[in-house]
Length: 333
Image 1 (cartoon, one colour):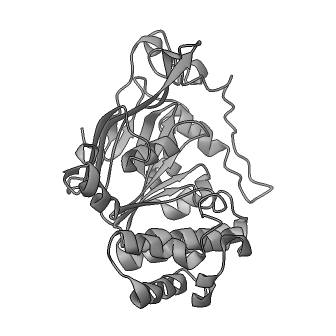
Image 2 (tube, one colour; image 1 turned 90 degrees about the vertical axis):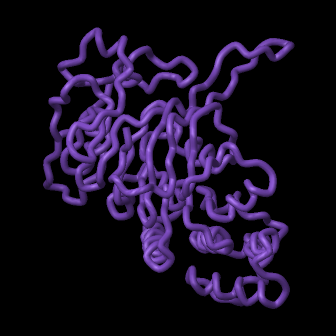
C-alpha cells in the first residue's frame, strides 16, 4: 500500500532491507546478522521534505545510504523517477548519482583536508562533464555565493573554516551537479543552535528556488517541525508511524512516537507536560524481539500476547496517517 498521496512520487522505496553479517571465529563464519534496516517502505514526492526520525541506532542513516547505494542493500526496491536504482551498474549508476546527492552529518570528516574548497566542489563538475577550467571556477564561485560564502574562499582549505561554514561547503558540493533529490543526513546535529537555524533556513531557501526533494534524517524534533512536510518515525530498523508533520505533532498514534514527542523541551518553565518514560533499553538489532519490535517497552495498556507474535504492518488509520500497531493506542500527550 502506498504511504503517500496518489500523485507519482520521485522516489519509491519498498521493503528495503540491510543486514550486516556477524562473523565469529578464526574462519570468520557468519553466525548472525545485525538487522539495521528491516523492511522499510516510503515515497518522496518532487519538492517534498520527508523527515526520518528516531533515536540513535534505529537505522536512519543506513536507510539513506542504502538508497544512494553508498552501502549495498540486502534486498528491497528503490525506484527513482521510475528507474530501478538497485539494478544500475557502471556508467548508468554514475549518471543516476548526479541526480541523487547527500549532505553528510560530520562537516569536519566529510571534506578532504588536502583539497581546497574549490577543488572539492569542482570535482563533481569535472567527473560529470558539466564544466572545466575557467567555467568550472565561475560555477564554484556562484555556488559559494549561493550558500552564503565569499567566492575567494575557494582557495582555502577546510581547516580554515568553522563547522557551520564547512557544512555550507558540503551543501555547495552537493548542489554542484544539480541534483533533484538530496539525503540530508543530520546536517545540523554537529552545529551550534544559532548556526543550525541558519543552515536549516538555507536548505529551505534552496529547496524553494531549485525545487529540491529532501530525505531529512534527524533526531531533533524541533528542527523537523520547522523543516518537514511529512514525518516517518523509525524504531529498530522499521517505520512505525508515517504522517503529515502537523498530524504527527498534534495526534501521534504510535506509543513510541508519543514518547519521543513528550521528550521535546518546551521553552516555558511554567508549562505542564506529561513525560512518557519508556522502560528498559532498545533491544539489539542483532537479536530483535518477535512480533512488534516495540512491544517489550510499549506502555499501551492494551498490549497483550498477540503483540509478541504478530508483526504489525504499516496500516492507514486515517487519511495519510500510517501506523504499525495492531492495538488502538490509548495514550495521549
